[in-house]
Image 1 (cartoon, rainbow, N blue to C red):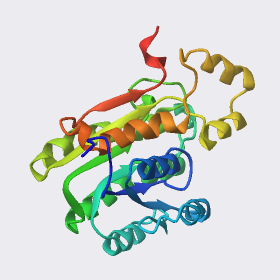
Image 2: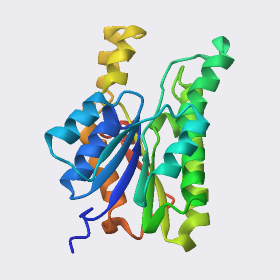
Image 3: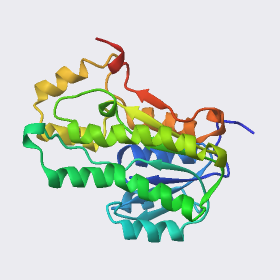
Image 4: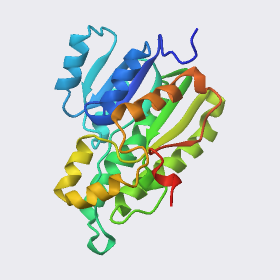
Length: 248
């Protein structure tokens, strides 16, 4: 069997209805697998399922900020071979304007929901073995970026979660890693134009030797980490930033 294939594997994906998460679902299918996509607005994902006659994949409406709903959804799904946490919120908030309500909102979606989902998957014995977990982190969680403190804190926490749980779950044949993207052309990037000038965005793009990424530039490495081709990789942060953090 091709070690890069996801044939006969089912992957649970949070934040699956847009951006990187949606692209992960598409690439999982291209690799021969199936997905259970979680998100608040599932219309586009369901259309993708219907258009491609994906009888073994599904779109499930879920607001990951609601713990009770998470528990109910995890209870209802079948066995899975991997979990990708792609749900996330990004908003700038310089420390002098620290907003506790915003912090709670970002932390709940980016971090707390990942803890709840993975703990419920383990408690309900939903993982087949071997299995792989991938958290979508960010270079903001590895390097200090102005105004990105709250967001960066939640993403940095995903990194230590991956390392800790990689250690805890190795005996269960469950690997845990993160991918840490730089700027990717998604709706979140487009939304940045609402609080950043065009000049600032253009200046930032010049800091990326290979330019801003596309969703597939993150989704394809995630598929690799879900596959048996990466069976000796766990507890790692895979930086995907077009060379941004490799230059001075």
